[in-house]
Structure formats: C-alpha cells, structure tokens
Image (cartoon, rainbow, N blue to C red; front, side):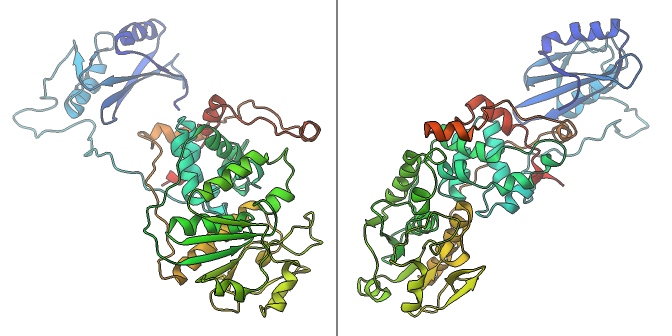
Length: 461
C-alpha cells in the first residue's frame, strides 16, 4: 500500500488537487493501471518540497471521464495526454490537448515519453511459499490465507479440503509448523495460520463429493485415528470401497481418547468423521481384527494398518484396533524395528509397504508418536501408494481456486510496512480446563484482517 494515499471519487479530484496546490504541493506524475473492467488512476504529489509524498487514487469505470488537473498544474497535460492516448482514458478539459498527435510532426516518427508495453492480464507465476513447504500435508497455505483476507471463506475451505480433509480438527490441534516458517515472524508477528484454518471451517461451506467411478476394489483400514481416517477419505474419493475397523466403540483414535475436549470439542471430531462416512466409508466399531488372513478371506484387495504407538509413550496409552498394540505385528510375521525406544513396523519409506504383499502401514505405528498433522500427511501418502497398488495413478483431482493476484507493483510494497496482529481472544488454558470448553476463535472481521497481512511470498519473482 502506498504510504499517505487517499482513495477519492473522480468528481473530487479537482477540489483535492486545488487544495494541495494552495498548500504548496508539487505535482510529480500520474499512473494508470488497466484492471480489466476498470482503471485505477493515481496522481502523485510532493509535499513541502521534501521527500513526503501524497497520492490521490481513484478507480473508475472505463466509460467514466476524469477531469484534467492541467488547468491547475499545466505540466500535468503531458502525462494526461499520454494516458489518454495509450490507455484510451477519457479526460475532460485538458489545457493542452494533442488529440492523438502528441510529439508527432511530419519530420519525426511517433514517440512517447512513456512506452507502454502490450498489457495482458496473465496469471502471476507462483512459487512454493515457506509456509507451504513446511506443511506436512502440503496445503496451499498462502492461497487460503489470502482468500480469508478477501472474506471468501468458501473458497478458502475448498483449498484446504483438497489437500487435507480435517480443517475443523487441525484448526484447533495442529502444531502449525507453517507459522514458524512465516517470514513475517522475522520482523514482527507471523500470520495466525491455524486460526485462519479454523475460521475457514467455521464460516465456509464445502461439500465433499466423489467424481471417480467405482473401481470395485476393497480396502480394509485397521485403526480410525487421523492417519486411518485420512487414508479412508482419499481412497473413497478415488472410487474404492473402504471399510474401517476400530476396537473402540467410537472412531477417532487418540484424537478421541488422548486429546482433551476443551482443546478438541467432540462435536467437531464427530462432524469430521461423519463427512468421511458420507463418502461411503463403512465403519465397523467395537471390532478387533485378530489376523491379516481374516481380512483376505473377507475379500479385501489391500490392507492398511493405521495403529497407535506402543503403550507407555507420551500419550494416555492409545488403544489400537489390533489388541495388544504393535507387539502383535511380530505374531503376524511383520518385521518390526525399534526407533527411539518405540517398536514400530518396518516398512518401505517410499511406498509404506510392509513385508507382506498388499499390506501397508502408516501413522504412529510406523513413525512413532507424532502430531495429528503428521499422521494425516502419512495417511495421505498411504492412500496414494494403495491407489497405485490397486491400478490407479495415485493422484488427486484439484479444483483451480485462485485468490485475487496483485495488479500493480504497489501491492508488493506493502511488505515494507509493519503490520501487527489484530486483537483477538487470548487462549486461557486454565479457564478452558475449568469450563471444559474451548476458547472462541476469530470472528469474520478479525479473520479477514489477519488474512490481509499475508505477504504472498508465493508470488515473488
């Protein structure tokens, strides 16, 4: 944003310019930006013969006429003639109107003080921003943050859902490595990305759907924690028939038995699981899987083991769908290795396959205790591998959702101006525990203000 800039209407231009003239301001130049359906015209003035500038900005319809300031500042007729000729900008009462013959004589070719390039509205080339690079699930963070800034929560939620199925959960419990990577943290305060994910979930609307045709393939998923649920979500969207087995009476794994309700309200968890169920995923709750062979006999083409870690870890003893935790892997002939004191399945790091054909594993059973976002990312990776194993391409269909891109260099200059976080409700963990309820998140206005702070590092040249 240009410092000391003021948006005015075209009819107010002469009054503001006359006032600046009376105060001794010097007219410097003017800018014109073609925005497609409208123009933005900016008049630049130097105040008090110093370095302080004043900018009068007006956005006008292409059929609207701008009053010329050349009768106040005669020199303005030069730049106004160029804007009139190069952009077909309509100006009235120019003191000296060259009528399309600016700087042209019989002896000289056509020339301009400013050579305007051919202007085309083309998409800005995007890079991978630091926040997205550090997101385990690969969410297009800068895009949905910008969309929140625009107040377009529907589109923001759609961007999140295409990369990660549980914005309501992770808008509350994510470790948010993206915030640590945010470049604004080096000169002020990083963007509250997790809070914006929660805002997108609370204010946006998105309906999951399946566009793929049924494949006829059946997948068994043992364990309904974040990794198992994520795998089920993505495989269902590829047209596979998915059944989730869970020893507990309710799905959710350690999100239900290990995370306090004041941190993750159970109605949010239930709603996210219900969205997976609506895709056709079948849940067999209170069901312990006793052998891999029994799953093959049931006609499953592939099996995913998405279990919790061993008892005795940082968690309040997680209950796996396989009775006995990861120790059962040995009894089923699956290779196990010890990592940092935890017995975890030995798998191929690229494909997540175990020592038995058609059996895959992900989540804490493989990585040891991790965060929800890392477990979801592991489930997403497993879904891709299983999809390939079943004869598909392991790829997901993405909608092309684009936040409004900068239309002038001035947008990038916003980065030199410090921006503080908007005021919001402070998280009081003591009060949350006492009331057993979570602290309120951002309202729409605060979320939009926070989203506008984004520097859009993905658009750098």
